[in-house]
Image 1 (cartoon, rainbow, N blue to C red):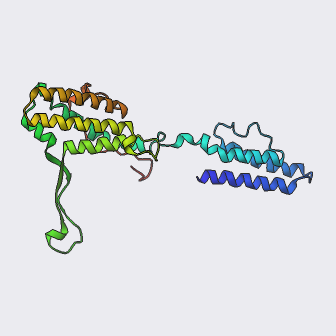
Image 2: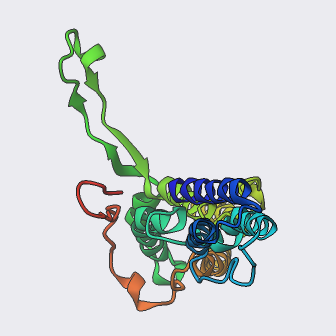
Image 3: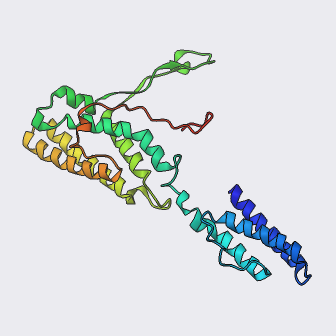
Amino acid sequence: MAALRRVRGLLFSALACADALQGAGARTVRGVCVARAGAAVMSASPDGRIGGSLAVTTRRGLSLSLAAALLAPAAAWASGGATAGKFTSIPIAKRRYYGRVQEAVYEFLLLDPRSKASDDKVSDFFGENVLVRKARIKSNCIGPDSVCKSDERKTSRWDDMQLTMFLLGNAFRIDSSKSPDRIPQVQMARKFFAEVKVFKEALAKADDADAQIRFASACKLLDTYLDQVDLPPSSYEVYKTPFDIKAKKLCAGGNFCI
């Protein structure tokens, strides 16, 4: 934005300069105005094409150059949206949630009824045993434990999988006005969640045949989702071992890290 304001300022200055010299025959000084306008137009166009064919030796030429430069951000900087750069939403979401999503996929695949998943694996996946927050004493707090101590909080791998799959899918939204319910990645994630719910019910009923059918159906939905968020399908060897669930950080000089 600062660069855009500078470009606009240069162009308006050049336009005023041309008005002041109109018809004065001051060719040398007018050349300075034209050079100033040309530099502004060229700086508004990274590839040097905007304004390249416009005549800026007259007020009309400068006006056209100004219009081209003011419209330039839509074209020249259009690639600066959610899919460009290291610090935009999709790369950040990938670093933040990839590890947790992949770890959840790894643990979910252990529930395959064909491998005779033990009750321990089922309880590990659906039970609340994933530490979210450690118990701690608040600093500089005066009072009883009920006031100064925050309790430990845990969640299940299944609940964490639902949360991170939704957040990762929602990061692929390209239209800020679109509801999450209309994002393909979120829609596919919710279809997977619904199928896993039915699979869990089949496990509770000890219906092995239905559990196998539901698990296979859930895996197909999961593979579609993984493809939509740029992750390999569940059949890949990468899901044979646990994942590091810590969010990856990226630093750009100094202490600016995300």
